Length: 475
Image 1 (cartoon, helix red, strand yellow):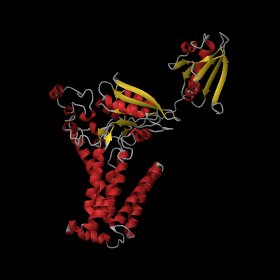
Image 2 (cartoon, helix red, strand yellow):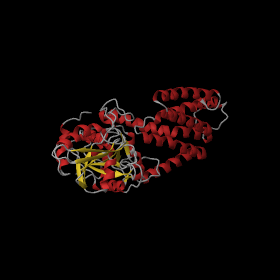
Image 3 (cartoon, helix red, strand yellow):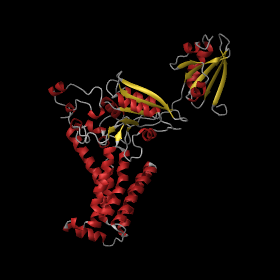
Image 4 (cartoon, helix red, strand yellow):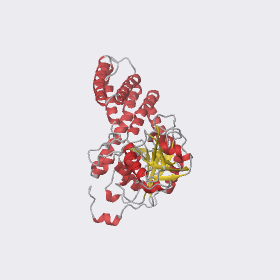
């Protein structure tokens, strides 16, 4: 460390006892203002005889006296100032004066909602814990902290509700976090890939969110939260497939409207996944399924197209993906321009050049639009990826190929788990009680029990009898 430019060592002398004091720290990690205003005046003017007096003089909470040389490097690299006395060389005082460069709390960007709180997590673990604690000020909220990464030494916090969350789930997450072997953990996405039940699945098995209110809601249900220092997303486990199609804004709306919007999302995902493969299958093998009134339109749109339907569909799908990636990687204003102008220009030019039909162009554009209705970004990526295997099977065996591919996907989902819990719950195994908050959201007074698949220690959320006495606010 002494080779580093930011390694600093300063010597001072106490005015009362005339003892020489040495301060050692990393200048890039500590707050120099705290050192000048809180540390030095007390160390220079206070009654300092032994190293233990540092703890009495310094008006800070995190002050530790230690004799372990092994801690020196770790503490200095974590933003501590080491205080040593000339007369005592085998004891150290470590004082936490970390410099925190944290961006201000801003509205959610990915899970934005018109109704509800407008706060999102930031990259500071302490700030994120504060956002959760102020919404859940109860002693039952337990926070356990771990350090992961042989190089990054990243702080990871495990959150759960004592007396509610299933102990088996807590032990599973705790064990998997402890067993993580990696050099640098820089984001929560690393944790997802390292502790998931099946790392080879395209489906995310942990739900990530940037909304504190959502984390509080699922903690109260009996789930587990994982916060990674340096990441603005908190992980939720265990989770189910149904949750990826529900927005937390649904709980701020009337239950009828919320259920309607959830059903629209499910329909949009199925439409986005199947409409282009069905087009390829029908035009390749099943012309007889096309209504007579529509067959003329299809023939007219494809009369100058030299490519078979599968190549035509892949060309447009890849074009959409290229535009989406280009828009996402460029600066915001430029990306929006590229997405809009590029889509119009390329779409119009490809139809006029005879590379694609205008019917397929409309279908692909609608499928892309439908995929954007998925509230969780990672599940949206999965839906985008799955369209290509469905296209391949549609070209090989037509509608039978689509059914076969859908069966493969369903078999995979049936075998998939999240922390050992069925990923398709409450659909499989069927849990009628849990269907109250799945594709259809029932009124709050009907949801007096916590989800059965979580196997919580206390299933009752509130009194069923008292809930019957008064209508729910969203009815």
